[in-house]
Each structure stands twice: as C-alpha cells, then as structure tokens.
Length: 313
Image 1 (cartoon, helix red, strand yellow):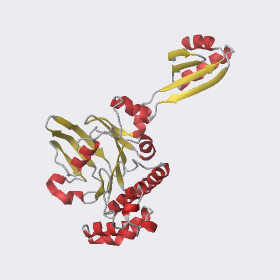
Image 2 (image 1 turned 90 degrees about the vertical axis):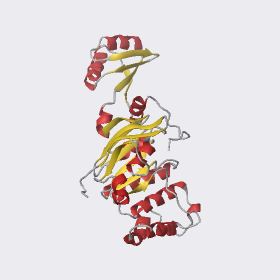
Image 3 (image 1 turned 135 degrees about the vertical axis):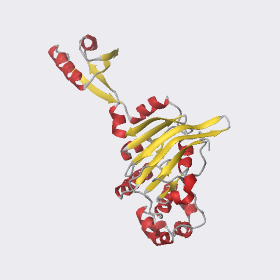
Image 4 (image 1 turned 30 degrees about the vertical axis):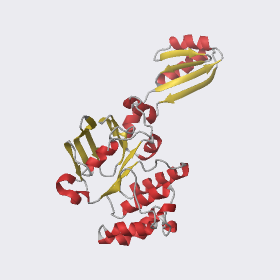
C-alpha cells in the first residue's frame, strides 16, 4: 500500500427502488488534505461515505482507499482508515476508558497500549473513569475521535463532528482537528457548518441531489466570489449620476441614501477620485464579498439544510 495513493470514488451510484440517493459521485482526497464534503442534509453525503467505506454496496461505480477496494479486499482495505459516520456509539453504562478498552480488544493488539495517549489527545483523560452516559455531546464526539485514533489512522473520516455542539465545543473540535491534521493525518470532514469548513479545509467537494457540483481547492472556489459595494453620501442623487457615468461599474441601484453597485478594486478607486473631484463627500463605502455560504447556496439552489431532514440510508 502506497502512502502516496489518494482516496478516490469513481461513478458511485446508489438506488433504492425508484429513489436515486447518489447519482454518480467522483471524489479524490489527496494525502495530507483536510477535505470538506459539503451538502444539504439529504444530498447524499452519508450514503456516498458509506459506499466508500464498503458499508453498503454501490449500485454502480467503485471506491478505493489508498489503492484498495473495500468490496474486493474487505477489512484489509480499511487498514489505516478510521472515523465515524452519523455519530459515534458507546455503551453508556461503561466509562470512557472501558469503552475504548473494549474497542481495542477487537482491533490490533497494539491498540490497547494507545488508550491513555488518545485520551490525552482529545483532552478526556480527567473524565476517562466516568460513565459515558454522563458525558456531554461534545465529550462523546471527542471520545469517538479517540476511538478512531486507536488505529493510528492515515485517513480520519468525520461525519458532522461539530453538529449540536455549543460555541466552546465547536472551538475545541476545531482545535483538535487542526492538531490531528498537523500530525499528518488526512481528514475527510463531512459538514453543513460552512464557517467551520472555511477555517479548516484546503479542498472541498459540494454535493447536490446526489451529484457533485464542485470539487477542488477551497481557495479557488472563494476566488470566484463576486464583490459588491455600498456607498453612502449626503448627496445620493449626484453620486448616483456619477456612478452611472463611471466606467467599470455595474448594477447601480439607489435606495434611500445608499447606492449599491458591482465593480473591481480599480474601478472603485477611480470612482473615489471622481466623487472627490465633484466634491461629493463619501460618508461610507463598504465592500461585500460573497461568503462560502453564499457560494454554497448558489451551487445547491438554496436547498434546505434543515437538520430535521433525513438522508436516505
């Protein structure tokens, strides 16, 4: 198995009778990526992740994890792969440490020796003796990552790890994912929390209604964002006339004392000079650049990401 081989999915399709849950997904996760897999609930994220892990059989297509097909090589293909899909599950009446010990007994002999190390990594060592039933949601999520780390994974797959966390829990989860990525673990992060993805990921894929509508560098996606401007002045009518006659400005609209328009930075600089030459004072000039959320909504057609929707399993 080559460390340099990516994790790939090609032409993944999953049908349940007349329902098409996944309609031809192609993905490539390169070693070292923190890869964000984005889409509204019901778009096919979890179903395609299950197919990639060999948990369900695709109707069409294939997936390879570091060059190995889970449907051909079975458990052997999952060497170096760990994580959770749709949230980790534990015995609530056992302590965090005993849950990890139980999981380690089913895994490689060396896993047991890593229990204290992984508890320290996810900052649960002080609560490891407590029953999981008394853990907060965030603590259970971190215990799920600890369980995955027992396997010393090269690929860590996390399905909505920050969902349901309070702001402090989200911050702790971000910090943990950054530390793991810094340790050289490739991470595939499925999420609908776009601000988390924007802070953590270098590459993303966006899925809509079972099909990939974007895959590539996050920076390249953000570079496609358009910028609009809002101009406030005490002489809005004069300012509007100047804007309409200024080259490089488009979509000029006057609303009250505010003028909105689209332009690049050079055109805005020339507009400032023109307004100054005309002695029209600017009280406010604000740039509004599309966020990842706005780009996402544009690509997914504003499909609902309401967490109450259920994805086809």
